[in-house]
Length: 289
Length: 158
Ligand SMILES: Cc1cc2nc3c(=O)[nH]c(=O)nc-3n(C[C@@H](O)[C@@H](O)[C@H](O)COP(=O)(O)OP(=O)(O)OC[C@H]3O[C@@H](n4cnc5c(N)ncnc54)[C@H](O)[C@@H]3O)c2cc1C
Ligand code: FES
Ligand code: FES
Figure 1 (cartoon, each protein chain N blue to C red):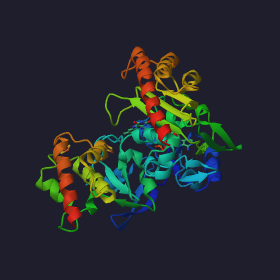
Figure 2: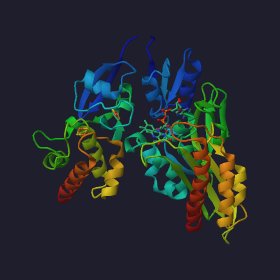
Figure 3: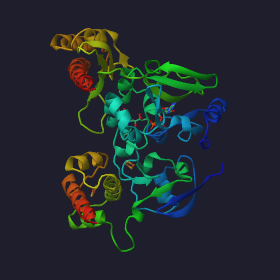
Figure 4: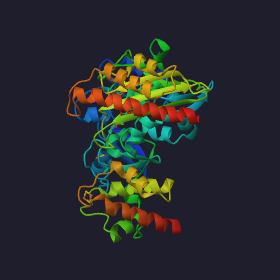
């Protein structure tokens, strides 16, 4: 077996040069909570690990143009502990808090959660519902990508060889905006979502929903941004009728598989229940903000 | 190919060791430095037996590479007592039977200390959530939680 090499470059340019220049298989590593499990399980056999945690642009949470920029490798504990960001984006925090245990959150990043491309990843529906964009840097330079365009199938992303997710931009938030993420799991902690729902909405001064984004996780090969479900809320006061329509639209959008965690039928039903509950929490938060 | 040469601070002292890239920090602590207080339960991030502090952050050392410790500061269970004087958490685990076989105990102690360092007066719920990533197959969690509560009380008295 060839020796596995490890590099921890301090700049984006150096990281991309290493990734693009590697003849064998190169792997990006952030917190390693997926990469090291795969490596030690002999599921991946890279020749080079490029640890991107030391690159300044990938770390930290800062205000930018009225919104927030979060480095893709920022660990989840740092995100949860950031009070201003948490207050602005409680739905994202719902998802981040659900990742593993405290000791896993001390390493796991949202960039890795997205790039690992698991359909059940807990932060992805919330970040998609937030309307965040990812800044991606690679051999051909930098581009801005809607988060929903990154993970495309289990374990597969749209990132080209050598490309790294640098950071996420969460746009400025109008007043009366709120978000939430809920998942269904057999256990409350340390389990993988059978269904996850992220919803973000904005109300006008009279309490009518002006904008909404509804995302379903774990019910298809990738998290789904469901415009039909968002449309059931827009223009309503998110009342019982709207919630019933939302629930139906959420079920209709599911394209789940049967597995040990749940049958198709169960997932379709739970998606409706969770969509309704998630919308009510998002509504409450929007009213309070 | 040559092994990686790592210099790291463990419990305040500088250490050097050689390791392969695949080796986890847990492997390095136990097999290269013979500091066997840190335990392996699952090697996949699920059980918390391998918990250490890495630059002040609670982590599973089975999900950290040894090479990542280069230039960093690591705290392990070996650094918890001061000579013969046990840390209040260790003392309370002994007094209140917070352990049986003890495999999970170093990890639980490190995790509990990380909690009390940031929150000296956690509620029972906060303790249970914080320790959700630390599995114990024999004691049952109740005595563990009681021991942490008792230690917290003692530490608040100063
Ligand atoms: C015990 C345990 C429990 C867990 N529980 C949950 C859970 O409940 N819910 C959940 O969603 N997840 C859970 N996870 C998985 C979660 O920890 C990971 O998905 C994590 O978020 C990945 O982040 P990381 O920084 O550790 O990524 P890594 O493991 O370093 O990388 C993951 C993947 O993304 C790539 N990558 C990483 N960063 C970037 C980047 N910036 N640009 C491009 N590619 C990148 C890597 O090449 C790799 O393919 C759990 C993991 C463990 C070990
Ligand atoms: S041995 Fe590291 S978490 Fe179980
Ligand atoms: S005391 Fe035996 S596993 Fe916890």
